[in-house]
Amino acid sequence: MQAPVKYPIYTTVIEAQPLPEKVRTAVSLFHQNKLYVIGKGANNTVYSIDDTHVLRVTDYRLRDHQRDSEFHGLNLQHRLNQCSHIAKIHQYGYIYKTNTDMRVYAVMDKLKGGTLHDKMYNNLDARVNISNKDVVSIMRKLIEALQCIDSNGYCHRDIKADNIMITDKTDITSVQLIDFGFMAECSIEQFSLVGTCGYTHLNSISIHGYTRDVDMWALGILLIELLEGIASTRAICKLQEICISNKQNKMVCPEYYMAVYTLYSNVIKKHPIFKNLLKALLGKHRAWGMMTASSEAFPTHNICNYDKLLLILDDINLDGGRRKSVRNSRVDKRKSKKIFRKKIKLTRKKNNKKKLDFA
Image (tube, rainbow, N blue to C red; front, side):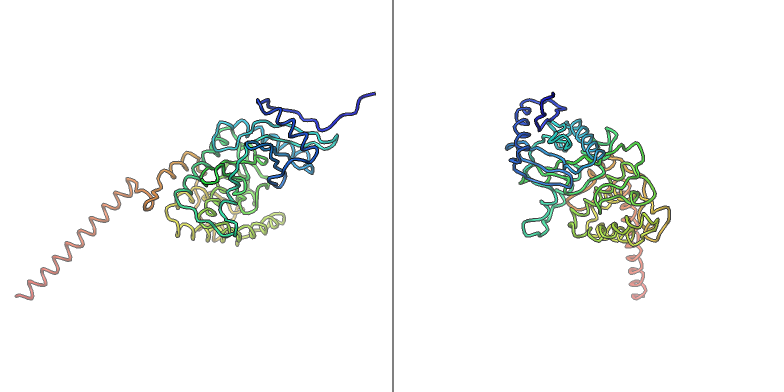
């Protein structure tokens, strides 16, 4: 007769010193429900181990394919530990709390600054103004993080303010990307509808597929939120819910495209220095194979790469607008020459009139 199995059992994928002993203690406390909860997500709960590490455990209600997706996401996240703008995974594996209750766990660094969403608002739910310099710094670090993910052949598919953590409470630009549960290969065109409503790419709610442009689109929506606040994208979120319900009936929702274009136009008028960056991030979409009035007006560009996005960021002049390129400077010289010639003509006409008056 076999001896009864004592739970919890955990399988370690990564052996990292000196964490295994801490993990054993944390797992036993987790089994006794004695760990302090510091945060909850849609599919996971985060517990505090000590001052520097946390234990993240998935929800017991997850299905097998969701649990596998979380595990593969942790695997990719650990491979990207060398990227300073992605949260580091020290150890991950499976916890068997009971014979039928299997969960995925991960030991991570404790990021004490909270999420970017919490940092954008204070305790009174009032919006905190973020300077253009900080916005550029945040966007640069997120683009570099997505560039690391893309170089490994994957896309994140759930970029949002809640999935961006702040490592330092006093510095809003110290951002790190988390939650790789929805990641997928970007070399294969994806059709599944995942992510968060409001950040979802236009192609994912249509009959067309998407690749890495899904992350660029979400990054563009995040840029609008950094500039105008989260309240500016609430109308898009509500209309996107209608689009998702209409997708099953194969119906078009032109109001959504018009709302996106209107928001895009208003933001570039208020913040012209970010015009080129927004064009690059939000410029690629296909409106369900139909050209509506809003989709014709919306800028359509080829899918931009992350190197080009970094160049666009370098081209932003925070002192007084966008830096003038060589072509723009030539155009300015031509304009100045035309203005100079007009002034000469006007002075000549005035002189001729004076001569006639004297005559």
